[in-house]
Length: 281
Image (cartoon, rainbow, N blue to C red):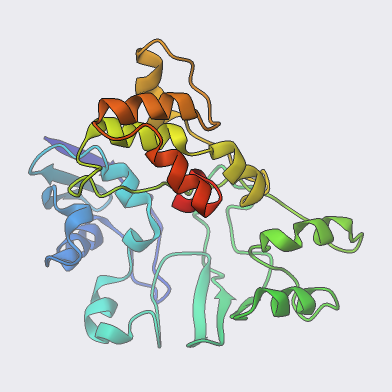
């Protein structure tokens, strides 16, 4: 099995080096090793067809390949710079192909990016496919959310990348602040160790899924800025039952009994901790 990738022409790294198929072929082997190779472990090697065509020869099919390639930590840096700088790459210098160059980085303080004036290969989905409209961008690291918010109000900073949930109401009420939302890409979920009792029993896992009140989590912890997924309860619909993101104590009790435990075990634990769903989150 193989995948053929056709690369954009005219793309260069910040140091002027061309980005081409050989770059990709040199980049994949950099992930060799037990701690970092899993995103590309299914790739046997990369064949360079021509300057702008790379062919991934696969060891086996990998349904996560495109997802992995699109993630930030698989961005393609200039391979020779990575080898030359070693652990200092990304700290003292970083050489990529993006619209901004790393100008300076102070651990725990700030990161300064400068415009890449040579950038002309932006996504066709973007309004601006060329150089950025700003010359310099400074990201400051402010440890406390409250401190960052206080700096935003008088103009000490121009933007907060994220606003703590508890400040949302205050931000929306201020006429001189603009609140923007973007569709999130993160998925938060409750992971269960299925190798330890009682969760070795599938009935108990199903009972736990029904006992958690997803709606309450959205209301109280996420301020309605997320949505639930019922994928974890889809099996319940196959049993002829309605599926809801609210707690189903009766359904949970039934599955608990089927798993050989007392029907009230989830109720009792939840009552002591203020609700089973809240306990688990």
